[in-house]
Length: 118
Image (cartoon, rainbow, N blue to C red; front, side, top):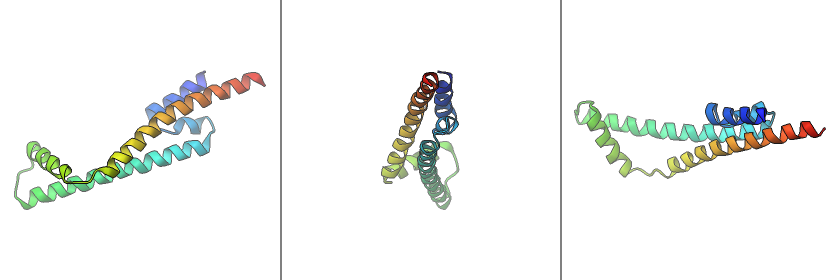
């Protein structure tokens, strides 16, 4: 039971897939870490591209850099921007997080059960 909670906490609170690595389920752990990390980079780079475009637009129109103007520019920009990949990547991140927690917990319980039966 102790190993299953440790794995679930590592995957849920530190990084998805880390619980699997600690429990020596390397392939599952690396797969979850890889998908989560790739999705995270997709969301981050898309956000950075959006904000860079917003800042360039504000600079070219000689607007001041205030929070209200930035939020207005962001809402206008995202209304015309295709966010399908960001939504998909966000869903993958959420899925990796949930799968990482549940799988680490269940595989930790199975490992503890296997040790008791031997």
